[in-house]
Amino acid sequence: IVASQALGILAPDELVDFAALERESLQFGKAWAVVFVAALSGQAGVVPADADVGLAQAQAALAQTVREVRTLYTANATGSANVVLREAEVARARADLAKAQDDLARRQKLEASGAVSGEELDHARSAVSNANAAVASAQAALVAAQQQLATSRALTDGATVENHPSVERAA
Image 1 (cartoon, rainbow, N blue to C red):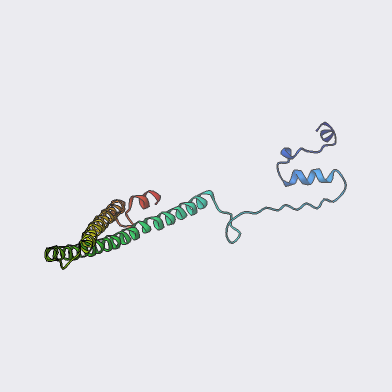
Image 2 (cartoon, rainbow, N blue to C red):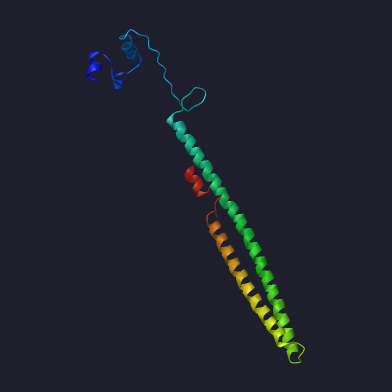
């Protein structure tokens, strides 16, 4: 630095403008070819202001939030369809149970006459037991689907996409 100062060379932080750089270059008697390259975002040669960048970021965040909230409403529709499916499964399981109980009752009436073997009666009892388990399983699946739907609806009830609290926070 001392040698640079003795020669009248400025340190980089002392070059305040291009005129100072030009004056320094003339001291050496040689023509300097200096190229400055910079890259800035923007459009049509206009540099974006910080406010423009902030606005673009806020708009992107809002768009992302709107997409996320729309998926909540889609989950409601999917959850409703799942509840209907589970209700149908409960109805089918109950119908299977009623049929198994009827078969068992018929076989029990025939048991005294010897028209039905003990093994056949055991199979009918087993079918009733299995059908009871299927009803319990279907009912548990229905309760789980109803709870999932209630959770999903809690995130969207009383709001549209436009006035959903998450969208309003991002706006």
